[in-house]
Length: 405
Image 1: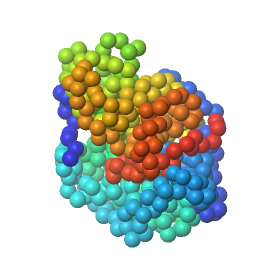
Image 2: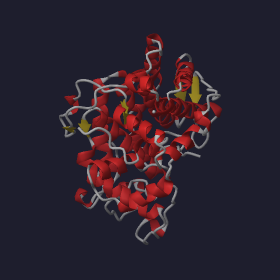
Image 3: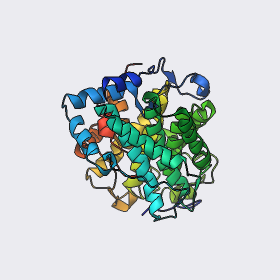
């Protein structure tokens, strides 16, 4: 189903649960200009993509029966990932070849989403059985997992690792019954079996890879409280997002991914899947399909949102680029005909549930106008999961800016 990168070519609970999750909200918001990487002096938990005040809001809205959050919660609760009978399938080695994968490849991603789903259910309904299930799933994997192999290993590691970090951060922040030794074993698993892959240099790969990898890396950095890794993740976002989504202020050509070989007009055109006309919001993989653009929009938002929860504003410097990309692709996903200059007049409308996090920040915090993205989000609600690394974001982020900072 998923193709490998083409290098150098086209290339959330009862009152006790609420109190348990109490953690300081980010204090002073710091602009993430270069040189501010050391601004984070203390990590805030939970704070991987979703923060404490947002989880409080989700719980209040669901219990009050408000929409679309009530329906989004029910969709999550009744999914296979929300079942208390869910059975994990941990493995020591997960082989993930391109285009397909053995059962363990699918199982790892699903188990990570299930752990996150169970953690979210606990934060909303207070049923301790859900958080115990999340712990059961995570402990099962941390007892055996050693690594990933084959061509899609980096992307598989990114997708699963990002969900693991979100689940673990919520559980560890509010459930003291997760034994310390088991928490440390899970952290060790993330460091040894995930970080080497998601921090690898892949400048010539299709950009959704590095963005997904950075999504996992920054989430792991927050959970394990690794300042250096956090700073490295900020730097990768700053470098890759401008090289993935085009703005006319970049010049006649898109920015080349730093450290790579895509640095001539012909190489850039090939890397951008044959596209030679560049317009505000166009993405490196637009002419491949909108599915991969969706992955990149979601991953970019996850990275920036995690940084925001930790007191760093990655959104600000890239807000116009993200807004343009969201609006550009939402139009075509909604059905607007592609002009002849764009991908030969044909676009593949396969975007998943990928816009809620970015829309929440740009519209509800920054007060920017994104009419096409709003239409797309409303059409997709309640957004579920792509079964890869995006899950339940109508529930957690629709109209939910969180505490003021």
